[in-house]
Image (cartoon, rainbow, N blue to C red; front, side):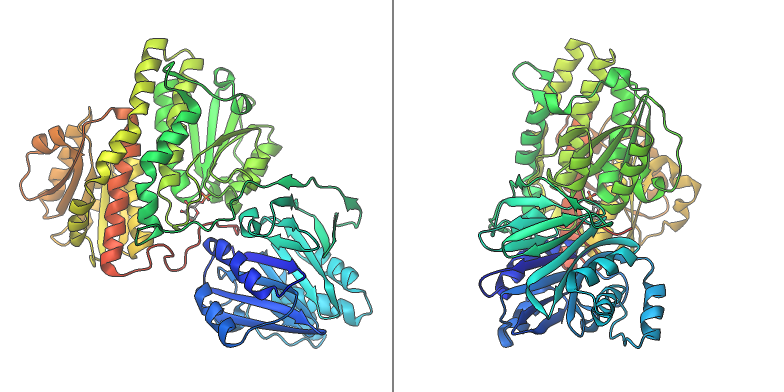
Length: 608
Ligand code: G6P
């Protein structure tokens, strides 16, 4: 992934670049670096680990210069150590890069044969040497950069700076996002508009295949063949305010607490609570009656939201749904129905695999739709129908409020689809809308269980393995519970459909194994309880998340129970997401892991 920044400015840029990198740290935090140019000399500071380490380095050894580039890294090629941190240099050239250069081995071999010596294990360093080679061959800086870009295969957003020119950065995009910000006598580059928000809200997004010449007072965009291209300048809505943690210890728990509000806000975008009807806005309308199939593609937590959506669309709208993990879908060559719609779910709107799936569906002539949190993202800009989640910026790497907002949109869309397809009459629509309107209240009630859940987390902390069970829409929640625990506490956890346990995983159960069962009292509660009893008989330690009636009817001693309010079926996945989030959060806090920035992860995954 990685985040990149560039500034051609009129004041010392290193502190500004660090400020912009802070806003991009969600994209990776394995190392960070800044390079500036002054009096014809390139200089850089780099540091392993999070951005604070780079800040300390810069305090001890400041960098002057009014032009510079910066980078925050999520390691792909080469360990997350300082020598692999960007910017990478080759004599008179400095480069920052987000993405993967797929033909870097071939290029490296060629450059080594020409006498270039590599000082890192990264794929990026080939770009610096390729540009430098062009300069040595007598090309002007812009020509050298253009020639190098033409030789790159793979995914990249990059910025190149030259020792010979203190009024030039060359930028290029093929895959990962890149925005140019227009200032007063200054120009900026960033992986997203939010990074540039303190400097400007006038933004031009580069498209795939674009490269640009960025100077203090001008910016020109070209295609690979060198012809000039016009891209529109837009006003970004990104806020310059850094989101802070308020009184909370971590962003994650702050975002968990924001859920009643953002779920309400999101639902209100799709539902007219006064009229008790679903009300899709004009710009996002889709004719669900005409669809014969819905195809959902997403990654990570967004994929699990989609999995819940599948149950809802099939149940409430009788609309058959295919759902895929984007990294599998993109190579699956799925035949697609002519009257189908492809729906992409993404918090960031920049996930590389999801975008690749989108391109496949576009080529298949599908109606493209997205549920997306970042409204200016590539996925949002590429789809005909955009269904926003109004979760606000999500900073914690483990998704919480974006997930429940995605569920809220999916629930509203499933009801809208049911109405349009004639499977939900107006009375049932009223009933379902009223049920949806109760989600904020129930999520608020469930927040009060935090103390109790923190105590229960003692039963998970430091355990080697944990199993999560659920049926129906609680099966994706079991998967999400296991995912949250893994990513935050590094405990190995698996989610299973409760009925599948007996087909293998039951062999894992012993007295050491905690089992978290998600089972509101519904028409399949008894089935899940039977599965739980099979576990109890083998000594497994059960944490049951259910409602009062479920707690009574489970009829089992020696289990721990999180008692939820009784609520309508359609909102259970939204509300039951909270105890599983809090359980994972408190387990991680007790184990002392880095909750907001867990090891090896990044919030926006712009590589394959
Ligand atoms: C990363 C994040 C997850 C997220 C997934 C998909 O793995 O750590 O929290 O669910 O990417 O991201 P997206 O932005 O497409 O929702």
